[in-house]
Length: 56
Image (cartoon, rainbow, N blue to C red):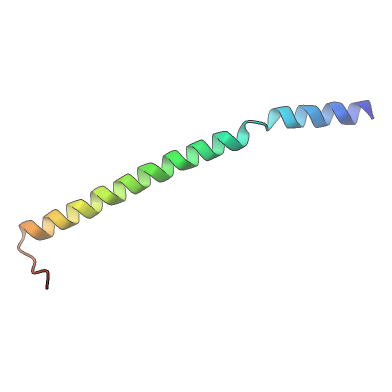
C-alpha cells in the first residue's frame, strides 16, 4: 500500500504544472495566429483600396 501511495504522489507531482504549460503555449500560438490573420486582413484591405477596387 505504501508503494502505491508513493507512485501516486510521484505521478501527481510530475504532472502538476503540465496543464498550465500546455495552456500557456496554446494561448501564445493562438494569439500569434490571430495577430497574423489581422495583419493579412489589413494588407488585403489596403491593397484593394490602393488598386481602386469598387466596394459596391
